[in-house]
Length: 140
Image 1 (cartoon, rainbow, N blue to C red):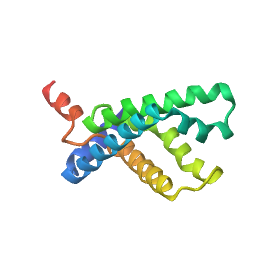
Image 2: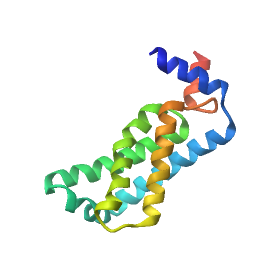
Image 3: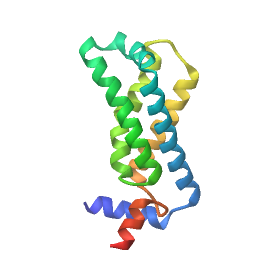
Image 4: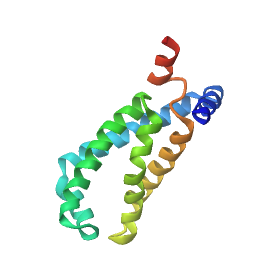
């Protein structure tokens, strides 16, 4: 707990509006990918199917879509940012690695790489001053 408090103090002392813009953009991009995966489940099934058995594929499709939808919205608002980014981590690592096991798509590789870097950053940085977490903390 002391580590999280120290990270929050450091983040609040070194906050900048551009980091909040990056957090919101990361959250919105994750949310849009969740909408895309929820509406195009066949695309996601075809990407995952060669690497996993049939039973796990359906679970993975729903996990990816729902965690992107919920996590993206929470990250964009700055509510439970560290936890939401931590939940996104296995998905983003899988999205990065799936480019090397199947057909290489440079656009998806760059997108997965940038989102992975942003998620790791926000796991350590947190929400920042311009977030719902900070507002709730200040109103208590």
